[in-house]
Length: 129
Image (cartoon, rainbow, N blue to C red):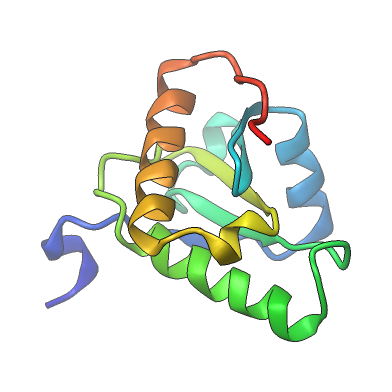
């Protein structure tokens, strides 16, 4: 069964630095474990579907820790329903150290809520500590 028929969101990837920088100009929503940035692409770039990129800085930990966080977030993103992301948007997930310690169910719920809030245009709440 492919992802389209399973009702799960399918994302492309952000690969170039300019794409990550462009997402900084869009909407932002902060959470304990991550920050989500979203940017609507110009009208001519809608055929690619939603795209996502992950940023985990060295401040979070060594390479092993950063890769583990990135893998957890990637798997959590795969559980989102197909209607969660906007098809003409680029998303960047900025990981925090709490993404490693959080339970997976909590992480997926927070990601789903963040995508829904960004879609509705809800203002960014303050980061909980």
